[in-house]
Amino acid sequence: MEEEKKYSELANEICRILILNDEESGLPEALKCITLKMGLSGAVVFMPGDKPFVMKSQCIYEPEKRLGDMLEFSFSELLDDGGYKSRSGEERIIFNNRVNADSFQKPLDLFAAKLGVESYLMARIENSFDYLGALVLYDMDNEHIWTDEEKQVTVEIAGLLYGVLLKIRRHETEMQLLEDSKREARESREIKNRFLSNISHEIRTPLYSIMGMTTIMRHNSSDPAVLEQCVEKIEGSSRQMIELFNKCIDITLFDDNTVMLSNSWFTFEDLEKDIRMDVRPMTDVCEQKFVIEYPEGTQVCGDREKLIKILDCILANAFKFTRESGEISLKISCKAVHGSKYIYEFVIRDDGIGMNPEFLKKAFEPFTKELIRLNGTINGAGLGMTIAKHLVEILHGEIDILSAPGEGTCVTITIPLERDEEEIKQYLPGGGSLSDDEDYSFTEMYIGRRMLVAEDNTLMAEILIELLGYRGIEADLACNGREAVEMYRSHDEFYYDMILMDLQMPEMDGYEATGLIRASGRADAGIIPIAALSADTFDDAIARAMESGMNVHLSKPISESALMNTISRFVL
Image (tube, rainbow, N blue to C red; front, side, top):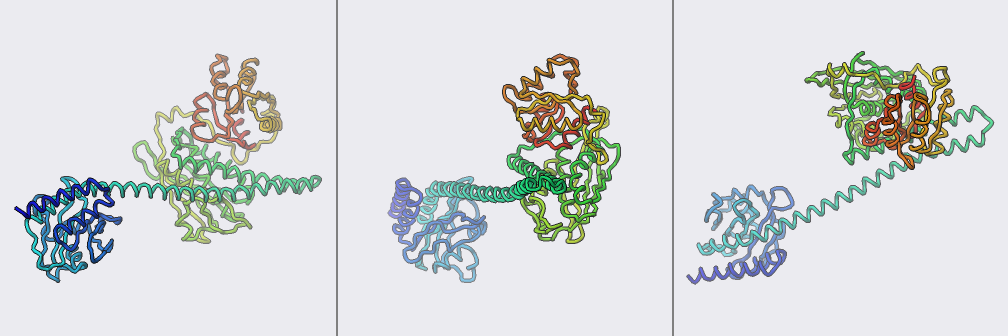
């Protein structure tokens, strides 16, 4: 009875210590109290450590030795240690007296061996659903025989420690989350700084070329040959900057998860026209041969713009890293059918310089480019492959690269596209670009055509009107959306063949102006082509333009070829 009273008072004392102290100071104080009141050598609390399924001594009271975190063993091994049968009653107490030296491989035997003891007692710190750790008492006296009262009080104290260990675990979880948050913020800053550093370098290079060429033009204003060379180099650098800006926007969209799908019906003939138009500047510079093969007369449904962007990114690399007079090919074929989904394979081959095996492993990482000079320069910002891979994944496809130095590169892309006969019957040909053998020179087809240009930027308006004037197209200028609506209404029906509508204008934007024109009730209100002009190339802006009644979206800065291609598509 005396011993029961003693251990009952001990349990009450431990409870008082844990209530009056926080877990950081209360737990060591409790272990000290247990050790002194029970006349033991020490006490240890084990909890899962920072490694998965590993136990560490989180708290220890041992007057002569400080083991700290040197003790660790498998969580599962602790559960299965000798003597443990279930989670109920005294069976969860492991009693070990005069341990045989041959059994030191068991985790708790190993613990005892490190302390130099042969007698210890363990109780699980748990409730019905959660196991948080273990309380271990030990005595350096090899003759210590654990009494039933000691076993019982160990179980009771282990129960009292559950709440403390739960707080410790939650605190450690919160600290880990905080540390993870700091690490992610640090990594984010590093990525941002690296991104800005790379972008700064990539932008400054073509910008310096443009500035340098304009200076040379001023000093050679009377030499037509020099002026023509400068203009060509300025055009090339301008295209490089536009390409870089577009890719930066794409990368930003991926990070924000704001990319939307815009499916439509198209033919591979349409696709070929767009691709040839995009790669024409590259083929003109290096006189490379470009071949496209595809199933003719096939109409499919998918996100045409994103598919073109994927192919443009891959083809851009193919042209950049293929020597003059080299050959690049694109072959499109259907490889499988799953219901209404047709799996199309797009294979792009080149006989260029190829990629090294080490570079190939990281080819899809942003700003990754092999430092190989071709024709005296290192081309590209190292974003094309990253963007292509992201877009392929968005379209639920796959991309694979085979390449070797000096043996060229083969990129294989598989994309699911829909083919439905009922939908195909409703397909209306539209879109596509002019083929390579068509030009934009002054022809009689443009003479007498009238355009309404709604643009508040004076310089942009001047450029558009000049480009139209070169083809004999007459253009009226509206400085905002309200003027555009008034000018449209003030002329006879079908007076204008097309409207070029800027989206962001004072007094009334292009969205509202387009809506008023479409709702005007005039005979030409529903059929007059309206092209959106905007530097906003985000999917939601393009979608909003289409919803407001516009027919096509032209991204600023607008190239001459893109402008005339659009006019030819809707007017001629």
